[in-house]
Amino acid sequence: RFRKNITEESLNDGVIKLPEFTTVDELARSMNVKVQEVIKVCMDLGLMVTINQRLDFDTMIMVADEFDYSIESIEEYKEDIIEESFTEEDMGDMLPRPPVVTVMGHVDHGKTSLLDYIREENVVAGESGGITQHIGAYEVIVDKDKKITFLDTPGHAAFTAMRARGAQVTDIAIIIIAADDNVKPQTIEAIDHAKAASVPMIFAINKADLPEADVEKIKKSLSEINVLVEDWGGKYQSQIISAKTGQGIDELLEKVLLEADLMDLKASRDIPAQGVIVESKLDKGLGPIATILVNRGTLKKGDMFLCGTQYDKVRGLLNERNQPVSEAYPSDPIQVLGFSEVPNAGELLTIMINDKEAKKISAERTRLKREAEQRRYRKVTLDQIGQEISEGQLQELNIILKGDVDGSIEAVSDALMSLSNNEVSVKIIHRSVGMITENDISLANASDAVILAFNVSLSNEAKALSNEYKVEIRNYSIIYEVVNDIKLALEGLLKPDTIEEVLGVAEVRDIFKVPKLGVIAGCMVKEGKVIRNSLLRLKRDGETVNEGKITSLKRFKDDVAEVLEGFECGIGIEGVKDYQNEDLIEVYEIKEEKRKLVY
Image (cartoon, rainbow, N blue to C red; front, side, top):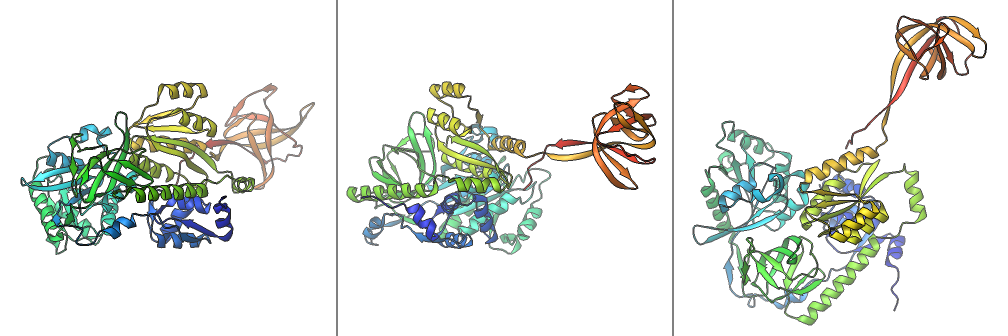
């Protein structure tokens, strides 16, 4: 049985079939428009989105409508059978679970330092440049028996997608602000993410031990963005702390537990587990591995799980210190081994009992994924190429992105795509987790792409092939450096600005006829200097009568390269025979100036 070409059919009718929670990039590809245009439409609708952000169905309909497309839903194959099979009686006893707390805020305001103090273990030492590049999940025990699960999310602007994901899986958000600084744009963004996810916020005002700390200024700044702490008559708890000395941290944890008690967080342990993938990576020894936050049930070694299109077996469970454990309960952060490929962060992992149904769901999801990819990665037609050329020859920088973890690749993609404008653009033709392979080198060679390696190495075979094909591979460990290098590369693709610089002005005082040379103007250099072979304008009564080039420049009978201000000279201009006394010859040159990217 042959399947019809869904792509052509849907595009001709102006109808696109997509699953809910399609990313901005996938939606743009499906409509065959630039991703920047989709982001602009979202901004016009009041939505600040990134290229990898998933959109709900209502938003997708509104965005598609702007491009004269309508969207039909492909029902994503979900574990409906699981949802239906558990009634309230089957759920068993609903037991209290630890709160999941996300620490958010601006870079260098002390998020990781706070966790260091709480865990009494240095996390920063393992991070490049002292900057948190990934989401970390840690469990701490407070007051001997009470647990809190902490998510440490990066604070730099490049990590919007990762930070948003942190807010979606959390119960409480701690927004950390340095008392010696101010409420930064990234802090406001973190507050917006927490509000959007309807997550209670506790404000930790850090670095209170510094002499330049000004706590009241921070509270005032928060009030200016309609966030009132309890001291100022508002609803948000706040605590003055010092992650360095430990001041106020016990009180902060008490406030977290108080907030958790009010929320009455409960989950059942007696049902098959379900969890959200917080982070995923490809480990050299262990293979694909994912950090999972368990939502409900008990996750055990040997369980069969469904995650995205994969249906596999849990081969092992490790805690955040890489120690093997046998079980994981609700709100536990746990590393899961057993994936056949690296899963996407944000996907749901569900333990399955019905083997036949699980295989059916996996197969259907694989089919939907394949169909969606066929729609997005269509072959470009000659008409489309002609249209792109007529629109102004957009300069593209092709990039293949390889990283150690899924979240980092996502954050780097967002940061790089934001560098594009209407003249130059970044085109990420492939991105994946894991070391650089021969396939990556071949793809880079075929598409004239640069490979950006983020905390990953390359195999010996790939190294040999890259030397043979002369493929450029750049290694990075800090996202700032990737962005700065690509920004410089894009600036090199921009057409330079041409700037006219006046070199000098000469006044015609006499006219001579010279054999072989024709008519020569006897001039006095009034300003600057006159240089042979430079460009000029002949001006008469303030109007330009001729433009051209100096063909000859003489001092008396000698040819010279230049004549300075205050000296006389003879000037011959290409194609000009008619001079008048007091004509002005303005000499100039055209310089090219490198342009900077402007957004």
